[in-house]
Amino acid sequence: QSALTQPASVSGSPGQSITISCTGTGSNIGRYNYVSWYQQHPGKAPKLIIYEVTNRPSGVSNRFSGSKSGNTASLTISGLQADDEADYYCATFTASATLEDIFGGGTKLTVL
Amino acid sequence: EMQLVESGGGLVQPGESLRLSCAAPGFTFTGFWVAWVRQAPGKGLEWVGNIAEDGSETYSLASVRGRFSISRDNARNSVYLQMNSLRPEDTAMYYCVRDFGYNRFDFWGQGQLVTVPS
Image 1: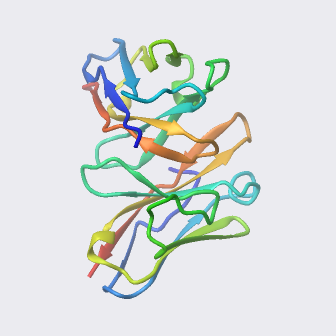
Image 2: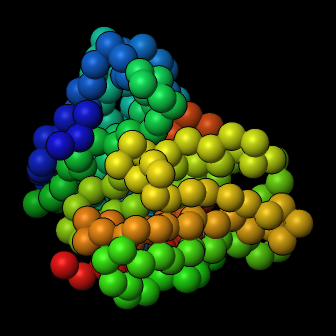
């Protein structure tokens, strides 16, 4: 069981917006502004889409946005497209016992 | 764009060892941390560990500490994941990633499958 909790699945219709939550604790998400999000299509390697809570790497659509409030981070995808159907993972940093990066359990996004 | 290429995966018996290699053809690893991330079949991502630019620091997941070690040879532009005492629960696709810092994994390899049957 991951230290970061994500919903197992979310869905939306093309053109709509969806939000995926990622809940941690005061020792990880609540403590640091180091939350990343990854998109993974079936059979492919993950792709970084958000880093440091709100930043998008070059080439990533501005339809993807990130935010954080307290111990919960969120990924919002606006203007849903068919190709957005994928698994999404949040990740953060923890320095509780040792320095580790941790991932959420993943969320399957279905575009209806 | 940087490409990472892993090699060395395969089928091994419980208790055996395997070493994965990661290279970046045409690019230099020098100046970057490198991490290993694994994904068991049908499961989520799991950070395994990482290594500093000069190899002076390494960190790893508690469940692999003492069995797995990460090293690098900057002269060969390569990073390695040495896996000893392998267990069935180590069965996964192992990805080499450029670690830009604080879980900013911006370049990923294609992955190497490691299978440890029960």
